Length: 195
Length: 158
Image (tube, rainbow over all chains, first blue to last red):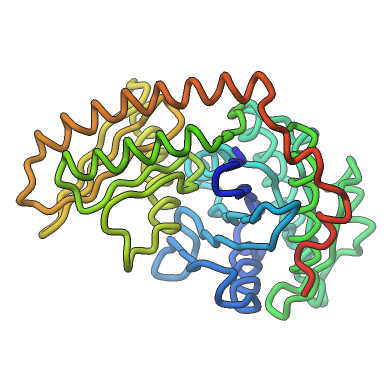
């Protein structure tokens, strides 16, 4: 649920990074956090296990500047990717304004990608959302690995709707900001339509 | 699907008044209001030194989690929550199903007083949010319609 505060001249939106376990959702947020000026970002909160697997969510508030005189802020969340945290994933999708699906390009994670994408559709539907109508972008992460599936194949399997898609290597930042910018633009465009 | 929350100047002032009054009446160190997506709407009292953005996000996370647990046991929601610390405690109350009112107070303050004042404030806030929703549904000032593609493109310019 976006929130527009005419009194404070602020727009706040929520974007969720979704994807299978270990696909690099948290790494995306960590890169954004490390590369953003101190005054435009808040604290990166990670609710994770002792082995750094996301337990509930990671959260990063990010100011992206002014649009039409309104201070615009995105709240970025990740979900826990592991299958058994489904209840938590469902909760984090509440009030979402846009979704980034982070796919793991490795051949052996193809099934996990498909399963996670199906899970995203189901969980969104449970909250009354239709993925086809929500601002949505896909990132093919881990492009540097030798066992990465060609992008055309990933796209054919995961992106039949032809939403914006990006190749990424999250630890070095390749494609990270391109993905975020595309998602942010879609969210704001959607918001403008609804007002 | 959750609808957009739109806050206009007039209602923002009234919400702030309710929060200020609640902080004083309940002897709370701080009062805050967040929407269920975790975005902070208002604060009152001693906010200095507190990371209120994180407070908002974690409060919302907590409330939706407890809501999930409530549904598992057949309750629609746990509308009120109380967390007791060694020195300070936190009381949270769901207002009108879409925002959360939180109070941080020293343990010398009576929980009964906090509950009583919070309930009264929650009723007032629920009415304000209802009015705000109907105002937004009527259209209100649609400033965002004037935002151009170029404005959006210019965001993130490093």
